[in-house]
Image 1: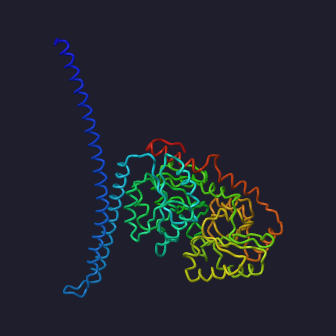
Image 2 (image 1 turned 30 degrees about the horizontal axis):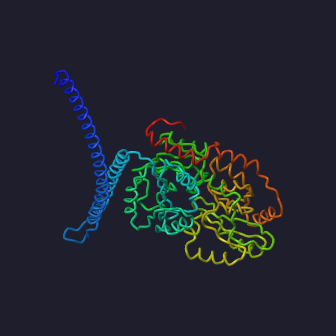
Length: 509
């Protein structure tokens, strides 16, 4: 063989060998990275388990020490017991801080170690069907969008943060009736459900409310920071206070600056006013508060022309009244509710006025928490016994479309019912908390009454043809509630898709 040819072949073999070595090195690096990635996730998971176990063991040990009887061989004085109690309390606080720091660091490591995969998996934790309208449009759009993989999960709750966690079975049954595929987190131990949630590896999670106490502990804010928390308000925030006090700022931190809001990855703001409320507390990167519009309004608007009324039509069309009472009875709390003051009068009126049909649409917490099971059962029996009366506790868009007028002492419907261009009567309790500036705009759109006699007289006036004279005020409100021409759900989906892929980049407001 010619020497020159042999040399050329040798050079090519050497180059080819070098290329194979480079490829092998890259493959080795990829394999090592994948192995490291898996090890990081494993160690983070172990760390989270160890934190939970260590915390329980520490509490058990301190509890046994505190339980020592002071009548043994070495009696313990009251001073010693007080010092021991203080030491235990301090130790518990230290452990809680340490555990929180470790848990959140582990969650951040877990979130950062998980690569973004397409389609983007988003989980919806749902505990209330009446509030589902705020998220349903987003979920529906995700089903149609190849960029997303949405999963709905039904969970237990307690409406006002009191009592036992329950109700998942009702949520699941409602989803079955609507044909919404979903997983069920109906286990009594919520942390076993959290294990499943983490195994789903969601890129983002939606919860329906900012209140941690309303959901089982495994779904609290601190447990969800392994993923990206996305906030879509369940109702328009129009109150300045939530505690019954009449002093303080016009914008309540309970509505706009809870731990849930601070930990959130993105908060989708209904209006420019609410966006400014969120930003005013200056506790979060202002760029995470995105002006999207309110997807719940889009869901309600889809019900126009599709009205459904739960009562049969009598001879000659009856006048249809939606009565929407709030849960906050008495002068404590936010203080809007007057249900306990006017229920008997409403029953007498319904029995007398057969040409009016009344559908009771209570706040979810009125029957489940404010009144109690026995009283609720008695009320339902009395109300449902009348042929011109019914109760609707679930979705309400089609109910609003079929109605002629609303009577409410509540909050959210002061912004929602106006979409249907019908009279709204607000029964003012006279002792409720103040509205914030947006709430004052909404309040001005309603016909206000303060007594039952005035309420009855006003309803009958509208029934007899009185014209609705709040068009100017309603137009101002709707201009605020619909801040741009873009569809809210589309804006939210595009934001999530772009920002997850471009994590950490600069975004416009």
